[in-house]
Image 1: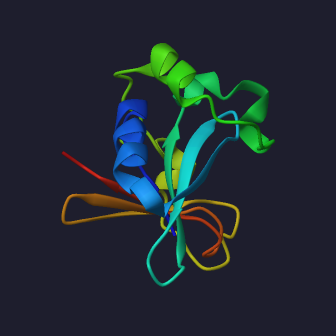
Image 2: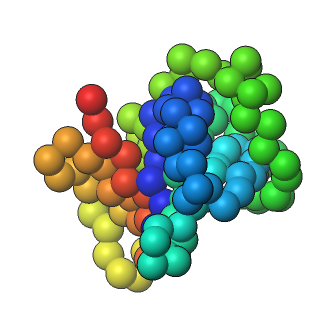
Amino acid sequence: MAWQLDTIDDLTTARQALLDAYTGGSSRVATKSVYGADPDGNEFELMWMLPRSEWGPYENSAPIDHLDLAGEVRRWSGIRTAGHIAVDAEAARPWSPADTNRPLRTRHSGADLIIISSGLVVALAFST
């Protein structure tokens, strides 16, 4: 399970809150993630996504690199991105199970649920 956070600052706060549950971090260029595990060993991801305009050649790829969280905060602090997913007309049309390469986006009680690929990636972003 993965949760998308609105700012890189939120990701830093989440990293600090994880304490012993923290298991690692990574940069996939367009996304920055920290990972943890609950007491039962269930792993989860907390991630922040760069503004879409900054994805560049990494729009369709995700090489894994070391996460320099302090450096990312210096560059991206205060930039909100959780409300900017699936903004194009294609993503807004009704979704069906045959649409495995197109995000499903739904709102429920102040949260956005995005399923990127038929259950492969699920992100929950809470609105404020």
